Length: 223
Image 1 (cartoon, helix red, strand yellow):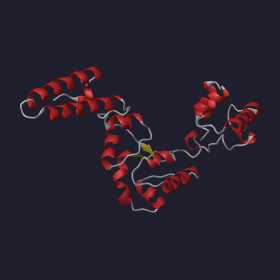
Image 2 (cartoon, one colour):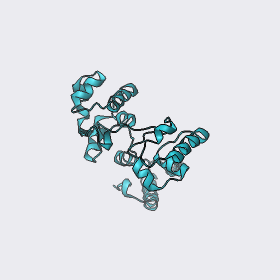
Image 3 (cartoon, one colour):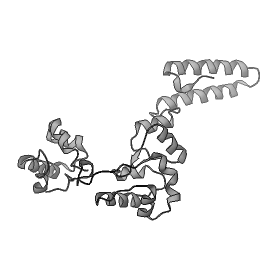
Image 4 (cartoon, helix red, strand yellow):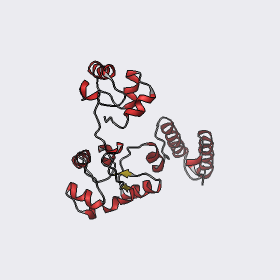
């Protein structure tokens, strides 16, 4: 049997055509022409549907996980597959979106964990996370293959208090590296007239900032 995941579109069409011919020969003496026509149309409908569907029918779960950094795992089997692929959640730098990737965690629990991290609380084991959100450690134990426990110096860049450019005042922005009075005013003025910044790339493009400035700011900003 052909491995459909490894076929190109041309090979797939050839494979489907050959299959249709084989089915026609095998069934010609067993079914009437109407039934054979119906089977043929069903196969052609499937090909037409697949061609118009951006998510191909044979797209694997592994591909989805690799391409979507915020893919939300549905089962423990997916957790183990992601762990084998090297996907990990650093619990001491995780965002709300990171926590929501884990099955069984609510938006309320995710926000609570992030608030604790922002107050400089660090988690050293799964029991710490369980205690923080008020569940049993046994319930979270199956998630450990994907959890990464790294510890940070409270004064390091990884644990510094980050500034939200969509909320910060001109005075607060001026305390950041590479941000002088002119740039601080531009940040506030542009968000007021054009809306909030979505991320670092959006900030860079809207203000035409050099990459060196963004490299210095990325450790100090949050969105």
